[in-house]
Image (cartoon, rainbow, N blue to C red):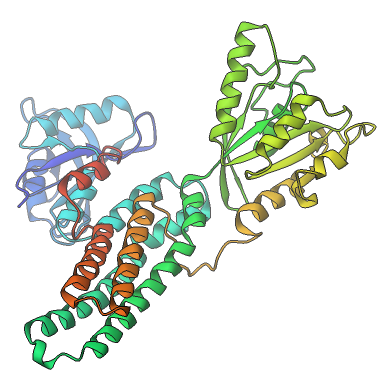
Length: 458
């Protein structure tokens, strides 16, 4: 049982209209009440009410801050404990003074994610819902937000619970046959196991089908813009981000380091990397930039290779096309306003026509076509149905693959009439692996690691 009371700032640090301090635990109401003065004592107030008053220094009786206090009594709160939220004027000094007074009481500073962790430990949410909370905070597009919100609502949890229920019924059937073998009809038991495990396997395949899209929506696509110097890489970054993020000049080698910018294209989050022009150079600083460009190229999920339509292909560009042609990549023929010198037939040796995008980046021409090409490359032009449950968490995807393997082993064993007590091991393993997704069978160290990724006050 959790017996201590915690507090933390729940809003971003810095100046703002309002700052919120959250307090949760058995002593939350009494301890905040000792610092708060209003028309009605907080200890006598009804749950889910808001009260105007002042935070008072208990030693000097001086008014420290004018606040609104929101009271939520257990169990009808996020953590299922007594929760008090203090809304004060936004500002570093105001918040610091209130926090100092709270921490002098029987209240300690919350650890990162501890409010959500308490909601999990107290049974209000499961582990997958808790992970959905952090995805909600970090979402970079409307679609990513919607996917995370459905997870917080328990969409994935319900599906996992249904699958586990099917497996527990299978395990119960196996247990009966182990205990009462005289009533067992081996062929019927084998068919029962194949049918039940097969139905769960079908649902897992359906969930895994969304995994690549879900992972992209959650984490975004790391996109490296590469090419030789002065072909328009920085201009492309500016055009896609709709702002002058990178310096653009006619001088080759202007970009010396990798510049990052997050954008959203058709609800797909992209982490754009504008790299230094790849070429042989004696300039020490530019050489470091080129090496970083090569690293970004190797680690990218998507590569945008920019070629100058007004120049012939050099040997380095042809080698680069050959190197990346097997990866997710798009060729951009920039500066289409210049007389064409680039040999498009050489480009088509490595790329289909739909992956070669003509553009005049400085004039903004071809940006829409590039965005469509990126969407088609990763989502065949569209996302899956809005009511589909996406699996986006790497941990969940790995556990679903493990569960799939266990179920296949169980089905194959049942087909050749392996003793059912041996099949039971695989079925139970699948049940436990699904349980780890929602936290029913997760180890404490894993739970601690997940919640340590949360921000303070969440």
